[in-house]
Amino acid sequence: MTPRVRLTAVAFAMVALACGDIASPRRDDFYEWRLEAPSPSGSGLDTISFHWPADRLPVRIWVESADPLPADVARAITIWRDVFLYGEYDATVVTDSTTADVIVVSGVAPGPQLSLTRLNRVMAPQCAGTTDVEVSDDHTQLRLPIRIYINAQSAPGSPGLDACLALTVVHELGHSIGIFRHSSNPADLMYFDPAVTLPSERDRTTAEVLYHVPSTVEPVRP
Amino acid sequence: MPRHLVFLALLLTGAVPTVHAQTEYYARIGAIGATNLLHDVIVTELTLRQSIAPMIALGGSLPVGSRGYRANLEATLVSGKYHRSQDGNSDNIGTLRTATLMLGLEGPVWREVRWRAGLGAIQYWPADDEGIFLSGGTTRFLVGAGADYRRPVMAKWDLMTSLRYDFHRFRTGTLEARGFSQSQGVSRASLSVGLSRSFR
Image (cartoon, rainbow over the protein chains, first blue to last red):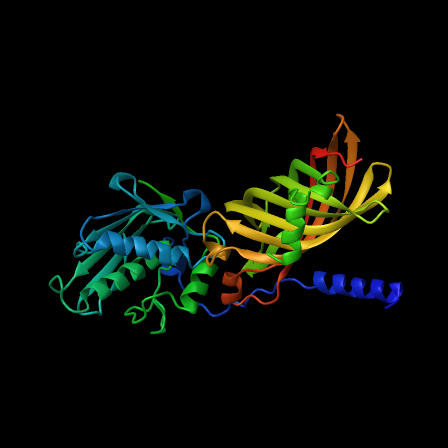
């Protein structure tokens, strides 16, 4: 091989090495996550989108110490954090409920309150979950904390109860990250009565997209 | 580690007394900057990049032939933040360490200035296994080149100033699992100063 041929080969190798960029996947398969609420002006609907801003991370979650709730919440935090590629969401369990952004308790959600938006998961026979999100009347503020209620509807140790609780906690925490609507696809974790135990690709894409769309409400502590 | 790297490392640590006297050792500290680790589009375009970070370099070289060429082995360690930029906003998202090991050749350019070029590997060690590093770090093939300037400061010691450039293609197991294809070309450049035990 002559020096000229060698040099040309090296040049081609360097060009081949350097060319092309990483190609990102298409993210066009997601579902509607935004709430719709009657506009305060009385005409039409407002679309309410929320995600935790970077300066509020990690989200502070207080969880009632009723087994298996703490372990289920810790697992759910990991599951949702791992959905994101760029650190868009993180949460931590705190011991002081008065400073928590999200409160998770065991039991039935209290009666309906007008200012609350209630996101239910009620179809499973063993357990049920509810997430209460309070949005200000002018639809500019989300009043903290977000409250999650996890209710065991069968006796402790009943078949399927632990799995139901674990699944329900992940689903309800999905509401608390900003997925305020249910998917219409039974294969998604955020389906109103989910059968899968982990976020699907559509759940993941929805969560990713919602964290890159501006929020219409700001989280505030009244 | 490839056998030739092990052999050269043994030589550089003085395992062979006859070449020990001609062995040069050096240590430098400096700063390194890199181009984007990746581009992505989620609603709008975003980029991920390592921040300019401190680095340390350790290495050594042995003479090869009689025309002033030397074979060298150099390791670097970098620790710094990496951040996401999108729509004019930038957020730190974690700590990232990289280590490189490069085997190369160097030769004279002009007076105390010498060129060098080499091949090796770069290892990414994220502080936390999350995000694009959810499945852990990654090791990539690396090519690099640079120039060194040495100025005698003591009988056997030189002040060494080095300019380096290296290139690798970046991707992680997580990115692959999440549907990213191909890989991102990453260029890095560093400037560092240190001391070398003179081989003159």
